[in-house]
Length: 120
Length: 106
Image (cartoon, rainbow over all chains, first blue to last red; front, top):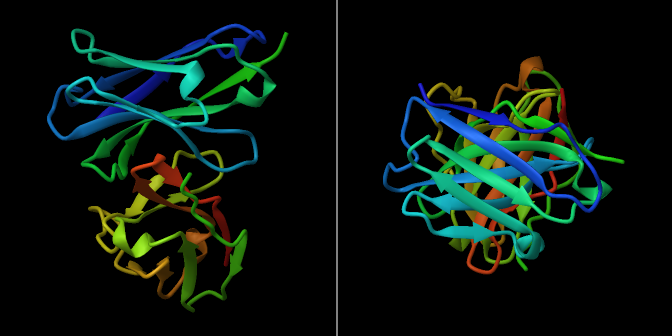
């Protein structure tokens, strides 16, 4: 059974960089045709796609966040990571990692999510 | 950028059929999927490729997609189906896009 687990600081100061890692077990991030994505959900609000990394290493980002976001993968650790630069209070959210299938990227496995608060 | 629009809320009586629409330009030309999210939990994929159900999703969940609207239908709605539902599609300009979500009250 595929499992995803987010990890990283729960509190980040404004203007700093938010860094999270998703550890994958029960499957390989190098498996063909899969995307590995990050999604966030501000408290009481809806889902927002941040970006994805393809099994081959290609990346795709939400245009509204592209200038501040980097997603990378580490196949040796079977992990992928998210960096969001220059954060503000608006970046406070539960951050989820998930697996997407094929070009349309329906997300079939999700991590439990981790709350990141941006505050001084 | 591409946008998907959902009604904020839908109400249904137990045992009745709930329909949740999701609208977007030429959405019928794309593959739509749906997620169920209960309070404090991660989203769960309930429909993908417009009408397919992942393993373990009850048959009462079905989907359709034509023109500018995709619809999630829940037949014989149960109290356990009360949740937030999100549609999602992929567009060449925005990549992955979510609808704003619909709160289903049973």
